[in-house]
Length: 86
Image 1 (cartoon, helix red, strand yellow):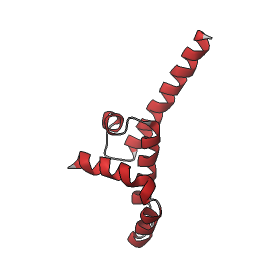
Image 2: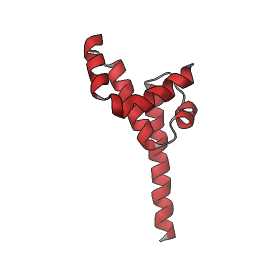
Image 3: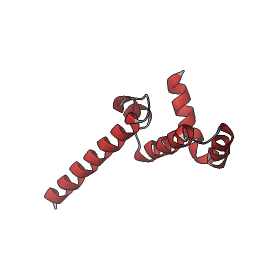
Image 4: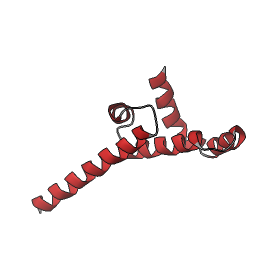
Protein backbone atom coordinates (compact mmCIF):
# COMPACT_ATOMS: atom_id res chain seq x y z
CA UNK A 1 0.00 0.00 0.00
CA UNK A 2 3.00 2.33 0.47
CA UNK A 3 3.54 2.72 -3.24
CA UNK A 4 -0.04 3.91 -3.76
CA UNK A 5 0.16 6.30 -0.82
CA UNK A 6 3.30 7.84 -2.34
CA UNK A 7 1.55 8.31 -5.68
CA UNK A 8 -1.46 9.88 -3.96
CA UNK A 9 0.74 12.25 -1.92
CA UNK A 10 2.80 13.22 -4.98
CA UNK A 11 -0.34 13.93 -7.01
CA UNK A 12 -1.90 15.97 -4.19
CA UNK A 13 1.27 18.04 -3.81
CA UNK A 14 1.38 18.68 -7.56
CA UNK A 15 -2.26 19.76 -7.58
CA UNK A 16 -1.72 22.06 -4.59
CA UNK A 17 1.27 23.72 -6.28
CA UNK A 18 -0.69 24.26 -9.49
CA UNK A 19 -3.64 25.71 -7.54
CA UNK A 20 -1.36 28.14 -5.67
CA UNK A 21 0.32 29.09 -8.94
CA UNK A 22 -3.07 29.80 -10.51
CA UNK A 23 -3.99 32.08 -7.59
CA UNK A 24 -0.68 33.95 -7.79
CA UNK A 25 -1.28 34.40 -11.51
CA UNK A 26 -4.38 36.50 -10.87
CA UNK A 27 -3.06 38.40 -7.84
CA UNK A 28 0.00 40.31 -6.77
CA UNK A 29 0.94 37.61 -4.30
CA UNK A 30 3.74 35.16 -5.03
CA UNK A 31 3.39 31.42 -4.59
CA UNK A 32 5.50 31.60 -1.42
CA UNK A 33 3.39 34.44 0.02
CA UNK A 34 0.20 32.49 -0.57
CA UNK A 35 1.65 29.37 1.06
CA UNK A 36 2.83 31.41 4.05
CA UNK A 37 -0.35 33.47 4.58
CA UNK A 38 -2.85 30.77 3.58
CA UNK A 39 -1.21 27.40 4.28
CA UNK A 40 -4.45 25.40 4.28
CA UNK A 41 -6.22 24.44 1.05
CA UNK A 42 -9.56 25.65 2.44
CA UNK A 43 -8.06 29.09 3.12
CA UNK A 44 -6.63 29.22 -0.40
CA UNK A 45 -10.07 28.43 -1.80
CA UNK A 46 -11.58 31.27 0.24
CA UNK A 47 -8.86 33.60 -1.02
CA UNK A 48 -9.75 32.66 -4.58
CA UNK A 49 -13.42 33.33 -3.86
CA UNK A 50 -12.57 36.74 -2.37
CA UNK A 51 -10.35 37.63 -5.34
CA UNK A 52 -13.09 36.57 -7.75
CA UNK A 53 -15.55 38.94 -6.10
CA UNK A 54 -13.11 41.86 -6.03
CA UNK A 55 -11.89 41.35 -9.60
CA UNK A 56 -15.36 40.78 -11.04
CA UNK A 57 -16.33 43.18 -13.81
CA UNK A 58 -19.52 44.18 -12.01
CA UNK A 59 -20.04 47.58 -10.46
CA UNK A 60 -18.96 48.42 -6.92
CA UNK A 61 -22.45 48.09 -5.45
CA UNK A 62 -22.80 44.54 -6.72
CA UNK A 63 -19.35 43.65 -5.37
CA UNK A 64 -20.37 45.04 -1.99
CA UNK A 65 -23.54 42.95 -2.03
CA UNK A 66 -21.57 39.79 -2.89
CA UNK A 67 -19.11 40.52 -0.09
CA UNK A 68 -21.96 41.10 2.37
CA UNK A 69 -23.56 37.79 1.40
CA UNK A 70 -20.23 35.98 1.98
CA UNK A 71 -18.82 38.01 4.89
CA UNK A 72 -18.92 35.24 7.49
CA UNK A 73 -17.10 32.84 5.23
CA UNK A 74 -14.54 35.34 3.88
CA UNK A 75 -13.90 37.64 6.87
CA UNK A 76 -10.93 35.64 8.17
CA UNK A 77 -9.38 35.53 4.73
CA UNK A 78 -9.81 39.27 4.28
CA UNK A 79 -8.23 39.96 7.68
CA UNK A 80 -5.19 37.79 6.90
CA UNK A 81 -4.77 39.57 3.59
CA UNK A 82 -5.08 43.03 5.14
CA UNK A 83 -2.61 42.16 7.92
CA UNK A 84 -0.13 41.02 5.29
CA UNK A 85 -0.50 44.20 3.27
CA UNK A 86 -0.10 46.44 6.30
